[in-house]
Image (cartoon, rainbow, N blue to C red; front, side):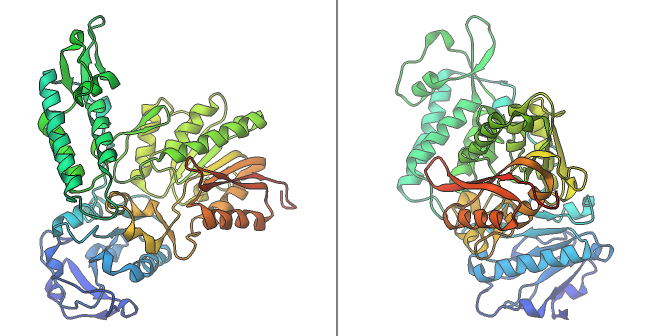
Length: 491
């Protein structure tokens, strides 16, 4: 390491240094001092005049191997640099056994502190199982110890009138129209007015309740009431009492964040409707997509072909919110169990919470770790199926994703690596070949097209899989790779 002259050298809390190999002269143009951002240590202010150098803030706790936190500046100006830096730090962490918290600003337009609060959290655990409480406070996205309750499951305790709810809806709809038509939605690939109007409807479907005239229970409104809110239908007079699961001001604030910060609605309401269940989600996990539901359908078809697979354990690698693991557990029922693995401790906590919420805590076993490693050798050759929706987006494409994704979803669940972005598929295929019993089923989601073909070729080259084929998603894009574990000489 080569030390740079900086104010931080006088600070006992941090040493500011830079690796010579990471010096950048053309890619990075610092517009302001790093003190424009919230410092890692609240007891000091530190700055670096080395505007052409990527710098690391190393807390003193690094000496004990606790954590190293990295601050990046304008990610849009670092497309070529980000992946190298990302991998270099991860390799260092794997070598030394040190967890890493990576912070990446989300876009140019946000004020500095919002950069830090809306940045990437990538918690890599190698030899250690937990971060100390002091290390956690350095994370730019706080690691919640409890997973928030979805909005649609909160108690409806805010009384209001039907007219008041309709007035709020019209006010938010007008703000949406203004933001969309005047191009005030900041960031890449802004959602259409139609999409935003649909999401606004979802918000009110989750938040509004009516008192049933017969049972006197408070029940979520339906499409008929939503049509009335939208001014498209009559209001049923016998269901006039209304309550909200969040106050009028809270709902207005949520929708303002949706428009101004491009925060996904699912993160604002902690609610993801997936298949026929509701999942609790937050910024530490990827929002489950509709196309991923097809992995459960493929698993169902595999169980129909060979019912014996249901009696064996199944595995969801990179579980995130636990959507696939819970879907498999509900599909299988009866004997056997589902093992869900995720590298992120907050994702693992979210998966456990969702399994408990759905009454599957005895069927879904969540472990923290890297792909199949925590399950081997205990489950070697014993599993009936392995499914995974791994990170598959090329690293250089991440900053150009839709703002809802690039700014808010965890890059640890998105970044598939350089080139063909196959970095995660290789250990998954290796782990699946070790986990699956002969005849076991494997289903993977990919970015489609050439990447899907590359994954299929990877499976075929192992010699451990047969019947390798590619299936389309809901839009007809070749996205999923299915295969069957075969006998090998080593079996």
